[in-house]
Picture 1 (cartoon, helix red, strand yellow):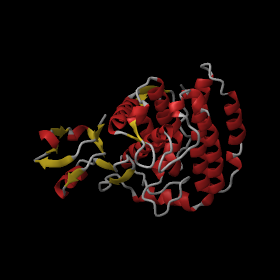
Picture 2: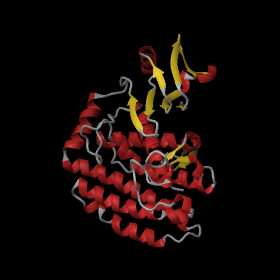
Picture 3: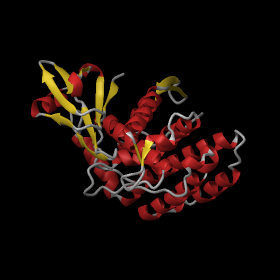
Picture 4: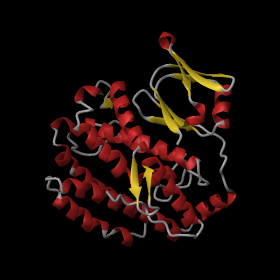
Length: 331
């Protein structure tokens, strides 16, 4: 399966014949394995010319850009090769019809909540008493199916996620990484910085997977399709955040891989330094490559493959072939 490249250094991406290489400071020169790359995440100050972009388009490689603080800036989204007028019409049909849109929006929320419960249950069974958290989530999730308005549905989801996040302090048990409350732009503490960074990586990874399907990333259902560039990747990420991002954060902290010294607090918020980002990304990439047993198809598949399979399920739902059921972790 094709992989991901992360660029932290400053320099220039250049094309030479049918090869791309990165030229950076101190005579650094690294070649990009173009045939085995699906996406490139660029964190450094990198210069790219039109010739290189044309080559990336030809090879169907997405470029995701981040600013100095690690915030997502945008994506170079090559000309779509798998786009389908039929699928765009189906996506629009399910968005414009409020009942059809609500069906999908509820599925994304319900899937995310069920996977949150899976995470909490795992730690509850490992001598961390989180029974009251599970009870509160169970009470609130009953309201998901009765919501007939997207904004109300998102409010319920927000309330559940707040309860879910409140359990993080018990799981991590480290005052250096206290949750306190969810904060973004800027994150007010280290744990929020990790969650924001991990979620951003997941958004862009799903966007790359959408590119390999017939789906249009601009039409989402839980997140409103408006002037925002992409929304479908945000919807699908709701299902996978708990089992990919959150579980990985617990691992990084409990193993001492990410430490307080990996953060910079001199910029009006807490941000990962380059070394911290590199450690996080290494584990994130490993996580996507990790295979798990997927009972539905009876095979071992990687987490990245799970994301693609989820998108195929949405395609089938839109075409009326099979009702979409969000992925539920079995482990």
